[in-house]
Length: 410
Ligand code: HEM
Image 1: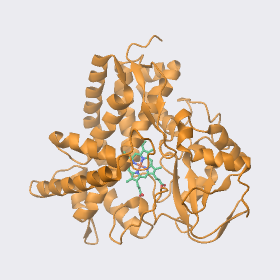
Image 2 (image 1 turned 90 degrees about the vertical axis):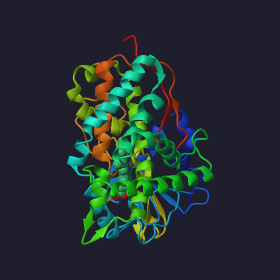
Image 3 (image 1 turned 180 degrees about the vertical axis):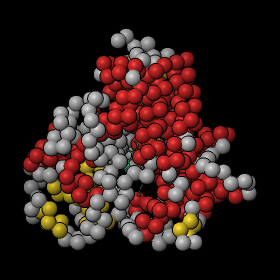
């Protein structure tokens, strides 16, 4: 197929992958045109294999569920990785290896283990609200969104309070992998150093835990997890530490920031959240759909295949555009309206329900719900007072500054 580099679809697709575009807001019009006219579009990006951009909900979910046709073995972002034979980096594994590692890790991420965290998450959320009430005027990104996500990662990993500041710094450095924003991008050296430091810290923590009585928390369950005599090695547990730092940081952070912004822009919905915390279960799903903090993930085509009349070749990449799928008018009524009374639909903020469906989905839902419950019950008029500063990234849908006041007028 020849590519007309001046076609509207080509311009739209380039906008979708241009980090600068996102500093003024996601290119919803471009995504809508692509969904309507060219739902599978080939994009040439510098130094990368051909990328096929999938924008419709049906295609994103179908690809997510087809591990045979679309592999994760060289990674799921535009940075190519090669997972070793013994790696526990779930996002870069295909079944059957992925199934085995995921079963091991799932033994720790049970509903019960996650639910047990609720009291701790509530205590963290209350501490955060105390502080913002005291401040009155503040930036919600560092004070609320980032703080909660980091505290919860530390909690999940069983990191003692006195070590948390280091974990925060390393998580932020590692978690910014793939962000093209100069305010965040660490140097390759800083990234490498954070990875090494986190690995070394993980080894010390594991040693200390093994030398003391077993504890019934997620780390305890990870240490005990076993299938047919196979356990997670220290190196694999170290990888898992790094994975959580990447997967649980920017994601939850940005969902919360988008939530505070959306509720400030819709005071009538904010009033409902403050008065009827029961609405939050559905409201969190709407917020996930609306914000879609991970914009896209990629897979590699494993065999030549036809899709909407296009020939995808083995080795090509596909980008499953979650934000586009979550605004697909074929699936969601009035997709561009933020509406917490919407009955939750099949949003793909956590992926398209395939093998790699987000391991932290229940934890993330819990964190977001509890934080919003605590926040709006104490600060019902929380208001954004200035323009949000958006993250320069075509991968994370982020907000990096969000000036707020607890004394909103409405
Ligand atoms: C709102 C917050 C979050 C969002 C939007 C999100 C989104 C996603 C998405 C889109 C995927 C890929 C799904 C796929 O490829 O089909 C994923 C995978 C993953 N997420 Fe999350 N995530 C969030 C929070 C978390 C948290 C808090 C954790 C930590 C426990 C976490 C851990 C993971 C892991 C380990 C994977 C890889 C799973 C695998 O490959 O089997 N995520 N997440």
